[in-house]
View 1 (cartoon, rainbow, N blue to C red):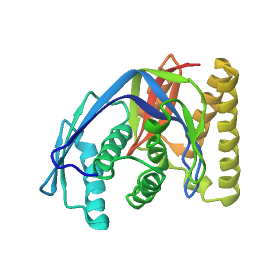
View 2: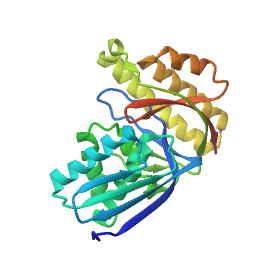
View 3: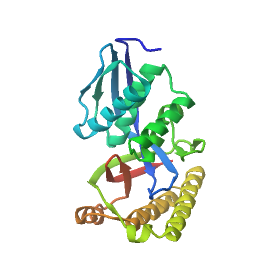
Length: 262
């Protein structure tokens, strides 16, 4: 039940949609891992007057949070306002969006049940939010590494974690539509990505870190084969000297140097 001037404080380790490759019009699985070396805090206060006050929120993220708020006002008739503050800096813009909007919803609904998670799928789809961001919404429910795919049950994958050594850069790549517009190729790539995620699950279950990094390299190859990246990112990748991985974010793709733990 909503309580005016009630405050919800959340502090959590960050989670990343680490193993994932998006393709147009496809529901590809996402493997979500907690980050060992980063956490954020979010405070949400429910206010009587409509409106959204955002404190220490990334300016690029504000639009998405405002869109979410406007949607619940228009579609659900919400007449409350919120005061939101963020402590700490997440690596992944999408995860901050998830923590904020999950907490806004909890302030209204009291808890997050399956009906609410279905609502999140609807609203994220309406707002053009990538499905890997929707996958992150289950972090609080699962609280460990997991696999999510649209329409399927969440699969827990144990205690796997990652440590982000550094952000190598950000990009907004363009899709290789000359390849992806071929439905035969697109279907084959979808199948290959699915098999790769199965391989990731098996490597984590077996505790095989070497095998897991091999699948990271394969996923990177799929990213580079289906997207055109800037010369800057190509240079950063070649000179990273470590294990890198592409990670989809809201409105951008991150190139991160990571260390994996099983």
